[in-house]
Structure formats: structure tokens, C-alpha cells
Image (cartoon, rainbow, N blue to C red; front, side, top):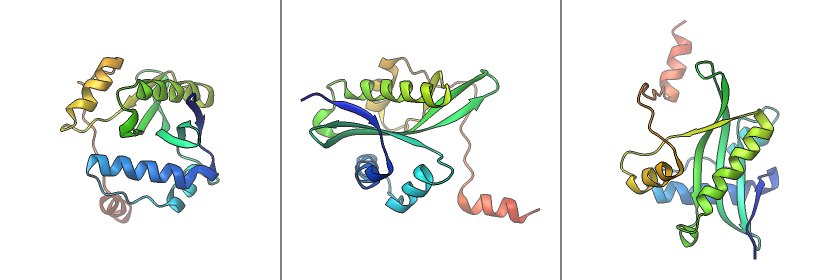
Length: 159
């Protein structure tokens, strides 16, 4: 059988979320997103992400969740890959690069994105080597900063 890459639709939400939950488990993260959260954020009136599925014979072998970001410094749209997961059975078989290529094609046709970016956990050396082999390089001129839910709410309340 051949592997098929396609953008996820609303009907795919349960399978998409199950794959993302497996990614969270692989990373040792909590998985808080529900099917309703994904439906609302990805398939509601104002979608904030797209997702790509890699399937074979109806089985989900890999997924990626991504969204657009515009860089004024670079003058281009960049697709931010928030999540990339390949089933353990398929790792090492070049499915990850093929899934990222499908993401890049879809992001280009949807948003005109001409580049990809992502984050890698410091303790995930294998993941970092994987991305470096594909040509990803670490950002050296900036640090990602994060404002959590409580601090964001407090920011709005302080005005």
C-alpha cells in the first residue's frame, strides 16, 4: 500500500487528537486538548491551524499541526509546525520528511508560506538531529518567550 498525505478535515478530529495524544505521551507531556478544542480551533469560523495526515490503509501513521506566522523581518509568511508525530513503527523510514514536505506544500498553497519553523525540546537530542539533517538550524538571535494563561488574563486586567 502507498502512504497518502492529506489535510485533515473536521471528521478526522478524533483520529487527529488521538495521534496528538500519542505525541504528548511520547514527549512526557500532559495532553489537555479535547476533540471539541481541536474542532473549535481548527474547524470553527476562524481556524487557527491546519493539520496534515499521513495514512495507509485507513491507519494514521503520522500527523502534523501547523499555523501561519508573518515575519516582517524576513518579509514572508512562515508555517509554524506546532506538532509533528510519526508512529513508532514507521520512524526511520523517511515518513517525517515526507510529512513535512506535505505541510510545506499545503502551507504554500494556503497561505503563501515559503519557510517552516518549529521548536525542539532541549532534552530531545534525537529530534534535534532529525531536524538538523533536514536543514533546520537553531535560532541564535532570539529567545522564545511565553506568557501563560493566568499572566495573559492579568495583563488584560491591569488596564
